[in-house]
Amino acid sequence: MKILKTQVGIIGAGPAGLTLALLLRKQGIEAIIIEHRSREYVQARVRAGLLEQNTVDIYKSLGVANRLLKEGQEHHGVYLSFDGQRIRIPFGELTGGRNITIYGQQEVVKDLTDEWIAGGGQIYFEAPATKIENFDTDNPKIYFEHQGEAGIMDCDFMAACDGYHGIGRKTLPSDTFKEYSVTYPFSWLGILAHVAPSTDELIYAYHERGFALHSLRSDKISRLYIQVDNDDSVDNWSDERIWEELAIRLGTEGWTLKTGPIFEKGITPMRSFFTDNMQAGRLFLAGDAAHIVPPTGGKGLNLAVADVKHLADGLAEYYQQNSINALDNYSAIALKRIWRAQDFSNFMTTLFHKQDEHGSFTYQLQKAKFDYIKVSKAYATTIAENYVGLPFEAFE
Ligand code: APR
Ligand code: PHB
Image 1 (spheres, rainbow, N blue to C red):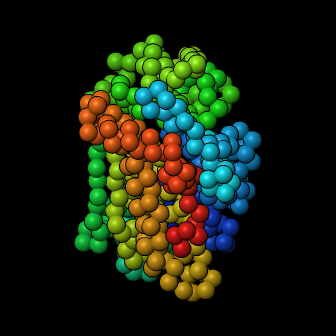
Image 2 (image 1 turned 180 degrees about the vertical axis):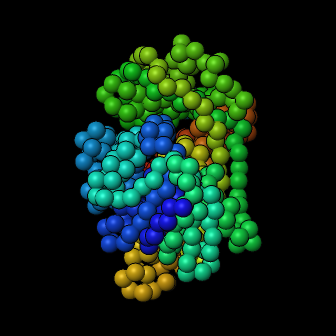
Image 3 (image 1 turned 90 degrees about the horizontal axis):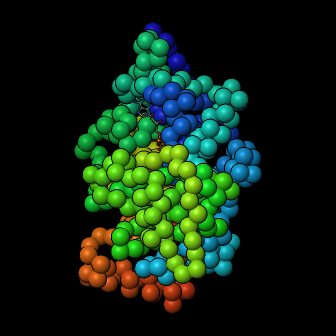
């Protein structure tokens, strides 16, 4: 039996778990991470890649932003398109200079893992947590397996950063929280392609054939998405069909979409989910373990990072000032941002996806919103400040 002992036991080496570990190290607090999957698997998982200003600032403060600042691309605005008409929302003048950076989530995960290991951090891959015990005492335990051997991690606190399917949420007593869940009647087909982006900033588009998004990864790699039915399959989508559809949906006068070889295709369902409590005793949930947003607002990773920032602040107050107040307040403070992000992600999703027939009442409301963005600086500002992410002070 392998016995580990630490101050904070972290389950999951996604953005939430890794960022938490590094934030704790900076405060002189010990942590050990156990991760179900292999290092290769975790680092190859292709996901979104939009980092809010807050997230970039945290990574700078942790000294893990070198590659992000070099290879990531800072964007000062975003294009919104409706029925072929494209407008731009400038972030600088509407948000007092806040921006977003485009940098793939799996690159973030690589950088964080490298930093954790380089600083002597303990991390066990292929080590699934199987049971969480004693969260309501000061001697919590995480049971896990590693290389065929059973293990126990004894800790002061447990952070379940174990994603939507993890065991953290399942361990929270069911009478301590309520779950909210919406499944949208559409999914995203996402691609990565070897082609220079046809745009300098992201384009979100409503089209009568459905939503499309043009994002990017580098000068040579583009990331694009289209709305498909929930029961659709990548087998129905040849490269040619994907490019044709993207060109139509993203199209606007005088603009052409460059095409190239597609090297990754995947379908992601669209869901809004969250629990209205993220803690019980010495067990804390963070990131996808507690909430999922549809990717239309680009908020998933940023919410995970904001959660663990609050959690690390609470743990630092506990160890340095012997006060449990900030930890007790963890859910309440994290949930303010989570509600805001749920609303914004739902707003972006319903504004740009085809939900009903072209010309229907729903369509007319979508169009009315787009037409209003064009004439109202106040409305454009609302979108800009949510998109780049509200500062931490806004919710404290
Ligand atoms: N034991 C150990 N590890 C586990 C267990 C378990 N029982 N269950 C799940 N895990 C691991 C998963 O293998 C995964 O690597 O927890 C990790 C959770 O990572 P993510 O799913 O990336 O979640 P999170 O860190 O909260 O990051 C949120 O990821 O899903 C995206 O869009 C989302 O960008 C957002 C970000
Ligand atoms: C991405 O680049 O993968 C991306 C960007 C913005 C989104 C979703 C995904 O809203």
